[in-house]
Length: 235
Image 1 (spheres, rainbow, N blue to C red):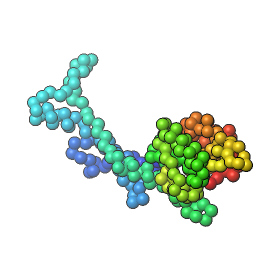
Image 2 (image 1 turned 90 degrees about the vertical axis):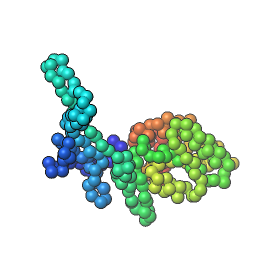
Image 3 (image 1 turned 135 degrees about the horizontal axis):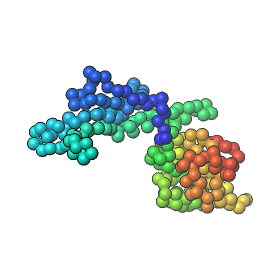
Image 4 (image 1 turned 180 degrees about the horizontal axis):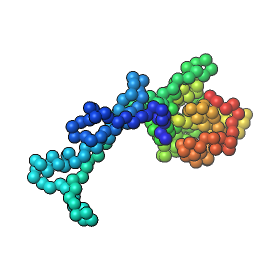
């Protein structure tokens, strides 16, 4: 669900000569890193070893009385052991992609939206246009109430898109001249929303933006795109 491909995950049961002295059975969940298969999580059946040993040295009874069978049972301990660092690395490795777009290398971190550190980047097409900048900052503030969002105007729009691709931001929202209007044309009140993975774009009215972003975060780009078509398509 969150982005790790099934072919990169496997379960490996420990051979008898690998088992710890307290374990009856142990299974590792492994991921295929660039350097080879490595453990993400281990699940061990420690039987009643822990409680039996504790009872032996403490003198306290740690069994359970089963009313129906009138038997005393020492519970088994099942121990899962996992580290956040290796799991985080696995998601990074699976998300990393390189591809060629218009003769240039594009680096993309294809994080699932729920895992992406930044969900939305709001970008002004022209940073010297006060109306565009003001509108972009206002939209970013509104979106930030619900999602981690950033504003960036430190480069041309193409470079801004590539920068967000590299850090794994799922969606970019661009405010342009059409959004705010100018002396030649009235504002259309719409912004461009760009998908990181496909580079496809749609044109969404600002009043519908929050609802549209909620749909996109849920993975409904294909359902939403026909409602908000845009000529040009990719960037």
